Image (cartoon, rainbow, N blue to C red; front, side):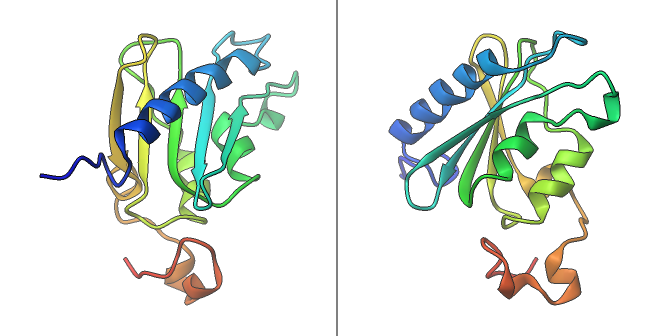
Length: 147
């Protein structure tokens, strides 16, 4: 029996949990007060965090996932909120994630008690449209496979 959780060791999951929860604390959300943190485990073992950044001009707001995603190439994603059950990435973030990772990438979604639900990108974004549909998959990180 494997000790891996969606391709991650229990130590990596524990670190993902810690960093994802901590990322919420740097959120800038004076309008909604809805803190979202995101942590990414990169292919090289390094970590990147992001938090939502709101703007008085609401469409300019940037989700935590897109802040972190713009920084790195990764193999696991964690998203944390202060609610139960955990919130999943919004549709815009799911599509943004789709551009950079394989459909099997695990996304760990944490609630206010650090309990998590994990789904692959394909489970969160079924029948998605991405770079491989335009024959560009081999040119992008994380897209060596076809859906």
